Amino acid sequence: MTPEPMGIMRSALAAALAAATALAASGATIERHVRVGAAERSYEIDVPARHDRARPLPVVIVFHGGGGAADSVRRQTRMSAKGEAEGFIAVYPQGSGGIAGKLKTWNAGTCCGHAMQQRIDEIAFVAALLDDLQATVAVDRARVYATGISNGGMMAYEVACSLADRIAAIAVVAGEMTALDRCRPSRPVPVLVIHGSADRNLPIDGGVGAKAFAVHEVRSLASAVDFWRRHDGCGEAARSEVDGAVRRTSYSSCSGGSEVEGVTIEGGGHSWPGGDRLVRFLDPPSAALDATAEIWSFFSRH
Image 1 (cartoon, rainbow, N blue to C red):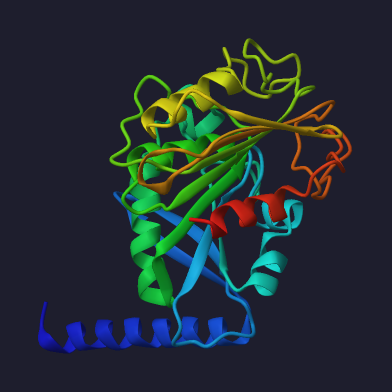
Image 2: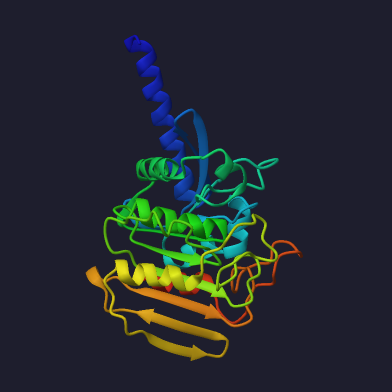
C-alpha cells in the first residue's frame, strides 16, 4: 500500500475514534464493529453522561439471552441506568444469526441455535471487543466484569473459563455452565449465580427444561457452584442465609480474595429478577430481588 492510502486510512480511523469519544462524552450509545476472522461482529457501549473522560471507568459486559439482542437486554436489566448512577460503562455485545437484528444466540458448546450450529468463536469475539473497547473509551482494565441471562449467562461462564486474565468477576442469571468439563480458568474468579427454583427453561436441578427454547440436558446450579468453589480454593463450609424467598449460599474464604455465591429465589422463573418482562410469554421477573443491584454490589467488591 502506498503512503497516501495509508495516510487516508489513519485519518479515517482517527476521525472514527474522535466521533466515538464525542458520543461517549455526551452519554449516547456508541455502536462499534470488530472483525473476527471473516465475520464482522458488533457491540454497543453506554457511557455515563456525567463523568471525567480522563478517568478510567469500570465496565460491565451484559450478554443477552438466546433470541435477544443488545437493546432487549438493556431494557430487561436496566444496567445502563445503574451504570449512570454508579459510574460504570455498560457494554452490550450482539450474538449471531437472528432475523431483522433480533433473535440472536451465543455458542456455548451445547447451546444455542445458529451460533452453536455454526461453531462461532465467541471467545475471539470477546477478546476483540475488549481490545476495541479499550481503544475507544477510558477503561479500568482491572475492573472489567461480565454478566448475562440464560444463553448469555452461559457466555459469562465461557469468558470466565477462557479470559480470566481480563475479567475481574462474573455474575450469571438463570444460566447454565455448559463449559463444566472444559473450563480451565487461569486464576480464581469471583462468581455470583442467581437462579429461580421454578425455572422450567433451565431447571435449577438440571435435566431437560419443559419450556426449553434449545432442548438439551441442563447442568445443575449446584454443579456450577461446586466447580467454582473447588477451583477458587474455597473451604467446604458455606454461609447460608434466608430472607423471605431469597436463599444465599456463599463461600468467602477463597484464594486471591475471590468468593463464590449462589442465590436461589423460591418460586422464581426464567427471568431477570427485578427487571423488565419483555414479552408476555416469558416468565414474570421475581420482585424478591433486584438482580442488577445485587450484581453491581458483588462486582464492586472485586
